[in-house]
Length: 121
Image (cartoon, rainbow, N blue to C red; front, top):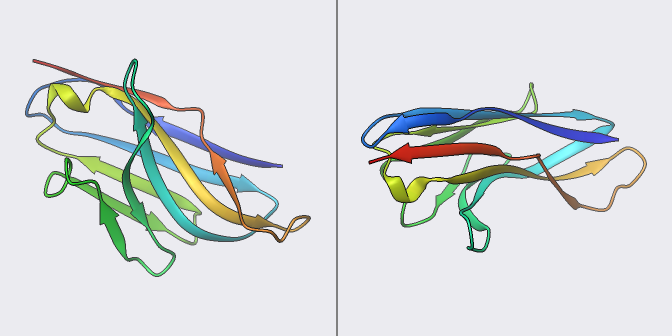
């Protein structure tokens, strides 16, 4: 069984900073990409940022220059530092990991439960 547990998030004023973290646990054989997605009310879930096992990153245009994704392979963790937050960044943020388990070597996507980020104007 695999779990992705998120922490962080919360409420901040526009222009402020927040960080979210996610740690994977369970019968994990290997992890490929790890990333963060977000979903605002009434909208589809969208990619925020992704980081490969080797450390290459990719960001949504809307967060480039403001958000930084990083990961710790030894801890099976991924982090998102969010600076210069805007009200439009308000959403539930979900951690995602593409990984293989010891009992299923097929690459599959796993999700965290989501953490709320609210930016007030």
